[in-house]
Image 1 (cartoon, helix red, strand yellow):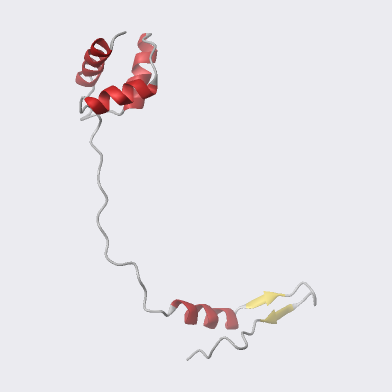
Image 2: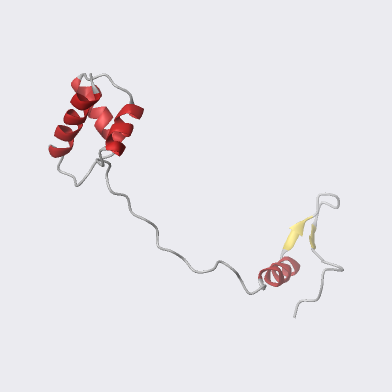
Amino acid sequence: MPDATLVAAIRSVLSGSPFHGEGHRRVWVRFRIAGVRTSKRRVLRLMREHGLLAPSRVGVPRGLRTHGGTIIRNFIRAARSHPTRNPESGGIERVGFDGIGQCP
């Protein structure tokens, strides 16, 4: 099937759809059900070249993803107060962080 004929078939599939747009995979599946043998990549290429792909949403731009440097302090504070299992002694003991710094 030539590209021009396939593009016309893609347009007919899209015009018969109740949705605003469909992607290349769904169009390809509709072709497979109808007995038209082609590849997904060819359908994608033709839909991209002719501007027939479904519209996609663009994400919202975010601000800087930095923090104030308090993550490590909160981690140390939580680790000091959280009991852990020591496999050598077989019991529960407290974790200590010597030499790292002091938590306020």
